Length: 287
Ligand code: NAP
Image (cartoon, rainbow, N blue to C red; front, side):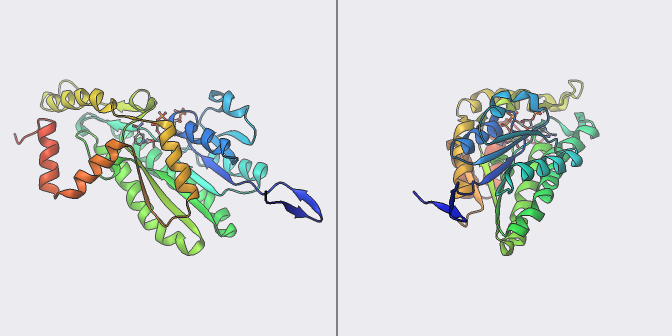
């Protein structure tokens, strides 16, 4: 056992600290539990802190309010985390949801909200943590993207738009932060068994727009079978833990057999080949 001494007194080695957004459920909550079990301090942030009394009861976990659409709440959560634990070594930008459906059937406020939560919220939280990581000369920023950040399904114009944005911004940011000692990593899960397909699935449709309904039916019909191969939130948390601690110079971490298969297929062919395969799968052809 390594022992640490200050002025001749043995002290606990400095624990590492992670701040997680969207820690109330799913991947965020599983990751909070994973890091706490590994001996980290956890700043488990969520819109409604009363949702997680079980997390709040654990040692070295601070549950505090953070709504990624509310900049003041981001600043308060970062301040509260630093006041309690003194440092932030890792940030998991996990908060997000899926806006799907025909673009024509989706009100503009839903369009804005999807990008505000999944993209602007992630950037705002990153901005709030960066001054600290820059002064500390170290840190890991883990952005939860998706297999849907590298390939698309029909009617996911908005969700895929946000996850492709997360991919591009993370790749560019990694150049910017590398000289500062701060790493950026992307987590790319396939389907995961969480509330994502339930309360986090914001589907807009208008049955009067009949032209879109065959595609709507094809997508909704495909979701059940796709969910059969879903990974657990715990397996995503394991990969997030690995990404935060492996010290590897690796930007992207795929999670799940479905993600590996889909992304291998995407890489193995050109646009015409891959998009043709997806069109056939969803019964989509020219009008
Ligand atoms: P989930 O259990 O529904 O969790 C979504 C989380 O995001 C909830 O904690 C929710 O908090 C939070 N959230 C939503 N809007 C927020 C806001 N404005 N501010 C702060 N938090 C907000 O679903 P999940 O699957 O774990 O999703 C987590 C991430 O994984 C998302 O980025 C999603 O895109 C990504 N992902 C999921 C899958 C999948 O199949 N499940 C696949 C690939 C990627 P509240 O409790 O306050 O609503």
